[in-house]
Length: 125
Image (tube, rainbow, N blue to C red; front, side):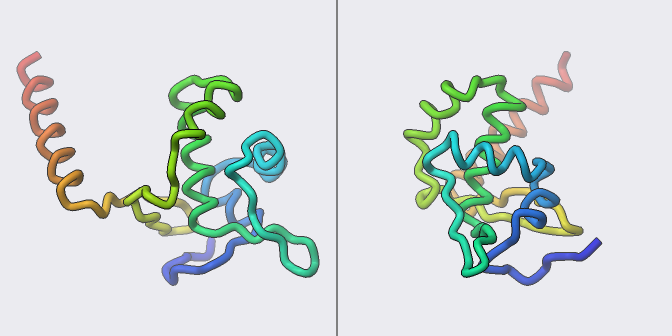
């Protein structure tokens, strides 16, 4: 499997499918349902996804599959989601999105402290 260590500007629908674990037909359907997801198309008409598009796809995936939102509910949540203000960075390794790295140092530190508190509570149970 190819590794994407170089940060690329554009990814094909097949590459995005492998990175996110979402089938291409689902990605095409989401483009129709979610107005925020509008990948550019090249001269041949192939979709060209950016890192911004991948962040939106991962947000939709989390809302639908992990948090149990309906499509309508996810649309309402995404209305308030500002992907350009999202301070996470995509980490792509071994052909998969490994993680989203939080770039805001204050937020990162706060989350680390919350994690420590939760771990201490869990150890007492």
